[in-house]
Length: 154
Image 1 (cartoon, rainbow, N blue to C red):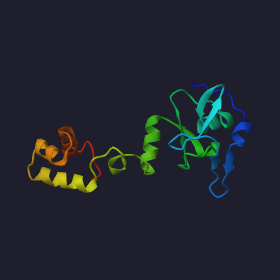
Image 2 (tube, one colour):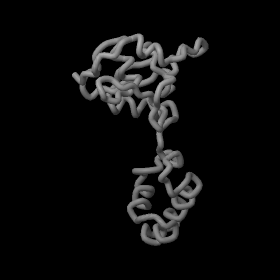
Image 3 (cartoon, helix red, strand yellow):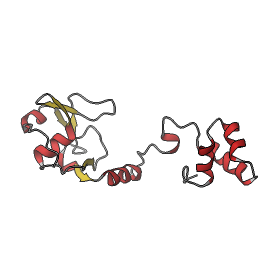
Image 4 (cartoon, helix red, strand yellow):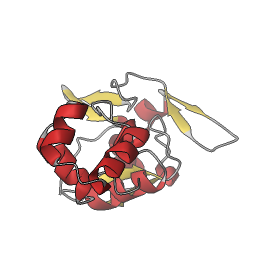
């Protein structure tokens, strides 16, 4: 089991604000760029939601993720947290519309309408090389669109 060093309930409760409407416990301490709370224990930075889970619920088995039912990265309410594998966490994220696939990926060079145009050109018989040159992407990107490895939803 991955052992998080003990943190007192009082330390966590001092850094939260309870939201009556949602039931969330909003982390008011330090946060990471993506919004997840951080707490320091024994000179180690820990994710606040993981520390809260261990403090109020129990140990987190090695390799398990602490996921949010409420989909609020600032929330550390143990009743809003559940354990899951990486796959379950990614599936939950996608189901809630938070995945970074397609246009939501900040590194994406293409968007839905562009992919539709590429698919239309594929149907007309254009080669991956022609399309990759035209859209300034690598041939593998066009091949992945052709075989629906990527942009499956378009």
